[in-house]
Amino acid sequence: MTSMRDTLDFLLYDWLRVESLVERPRFADHSRETFSSVLDTCQRIAAEKFAPFNRLADTEEPRFDGQRVHLPACTYEAALAYAGSGMLAAAQDAEIGGMQLPCVVEMAANAFFSKASVAMSGYGMLTSGNANLLMAHGTPKQREVFAAREFAGRWFGTMCLSEPQAGSSLSDVATRAVPDGADFEADPLGPRYRLRGHKMWISGGEHEITENIVHLVLAKIPGPDGRLVPGTKGISLFIVPKRLVDAHGELTGERNDVALAGLNHKLGYRGTTNCLLNFGEGTYPVRGNEGGGLDGAGAGAVGYLVGRPGEGLRCMFHMMNEARIGVGLGAVMLGYAGYEASLEYAKQRPQGRPIGPAGKDPAAPQRPIIEHADVKRMLLAQKAYVEGGFALELYCARLVDEQHTGGEAPAREAALLLEMLTPIAKSWPSEWCLEANSLAIQVHGGYGYTRDFAVEQHWRDNRLNMIHEGTHGIQGLDLLGRKVVMDGGAGLKLLASRINATIEAAGRSAAHAEAANGLAAALQKLGAATKAAWSTGVPEEALANATPYLQAFGHVVVAWLWLDVALAAPQRPGTQAAMRYFHAYELPKIDAWLGVAARREPVVREMQPDWF
Image 1 (spheres, rainbow, N blue to C red):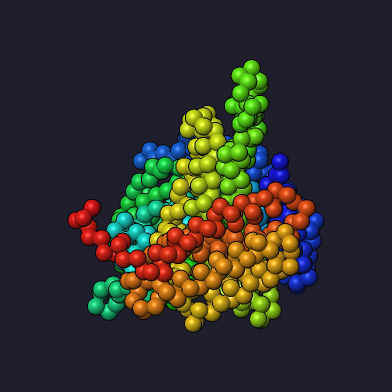
Image 2: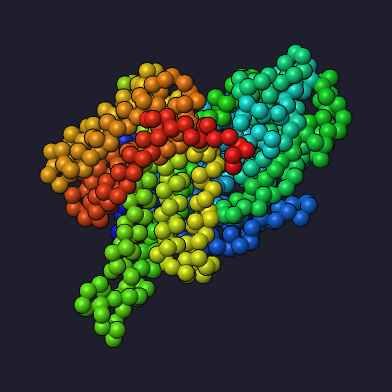
């Protein structure tokens, strides 16, 4: 059995050749040895502090007694062990306590935590993304006070986008932010506002793991007439700490008016609190600004503007895009956990006898189920999904490094490719690694449907990933409605050129020529369907089938990556078999998905609500 670590090392060092990054000034102090040391440390912490308690964090889900949220002790210990590892600041400058790790190595190291307990590791992922956003868009003082303490693990962070009445429709955000007094711009922590509103689905929104929680909150600043600006252009971003701090980052002892209204009780992912938060409802009255601002109790939660007014979404998507790759990686690792569990089970579970004369003797011993062709099919499908998804996420993380440390032209291309692939990086693993979890249950048979085996929890935990950080439908609209047509299709053309380079290389190999030809045909179909979908220029017609288009696009991308990986793995028969499986069983599925997109199949948009 090839271990996940072996696969990871192969993808990093043999396929992506991450050792070459140490030739760049930012990573000059690193080597393969330092990269491997980080991976070793994270693998050990995940095995000791996360994996043994994943089931406990699921069965003892967070509860609120009206005063505080209760979590099992293992969640505190795991989160603080992660903070102590230094991984919160893994990619940051050494001057602020970071390791200056490449993003691809950081993602690889975090994979161990996601696999061990995706829910308990969620606190760290959110905090790192929150702090990274502040490093990119915050003021020097905001970075010093908030981001630095998050990187150190003293405070954890969240992102607060959705609202009960708005969901994914951010243009309908109704949380208000008004200037806190005439001198609101003089606060050293940033222009100070008072916020009122409600935020839903806030992971990590309330706990006592750390002494403070840094909420990043989307809200609208009213215009001169007191009304909120309609649409997304009126959205701004604010730092709203759970506990108020002074200009030096010390707690003032005063609670900000951010209150837990309730916990969401989830199908899975139970080890992370998920909250409805009230801002500025007067639960924790904050003293009014003595400089002439809002006075009295319940004047609103104190928040500090990040960036400029109206640029909240631009700032927030710095965190969202990073989070989408993180979601994809989490989906991959849950799929991987199920794959490994079902593989081990299939090796040990005797049932049935071979097809043919030898199998007709009832006295003959039963065979392990891994010897049956259909079980091999299910295991091979899982391997194709999870290792293909792993390659996808690491490739995207490698593009991040190229964007930030490559030459001018390579960096520009990497940024464009990353923009194209982000919807796929989020959506594809969240669908197909969930399917891997379903197959893992099937391999276990009836036992897989019980709590005696971990595979049912893997499926429950993974089901969230198709929803949060942008549903499948949203990712499809983004891909077909914006990404493939932006700049005259420049991103799609660049991606096609990368795929064609792999096709040309594979065409020179007798072992891979057939797969190369199949991928070339699939790429041609994708391009033709893209043009056909937009041939009338009517968005409603083109986008009605954006989700099937997204599925086909993702399968073409993963088929490409599998072929590229296979070219780097001549001595890995399992890799070659998984590539062959994906091209034989999965890639042909695109015809149906592209068919409805290309002909602008009207049935779903013509369907009337009362016909249901």
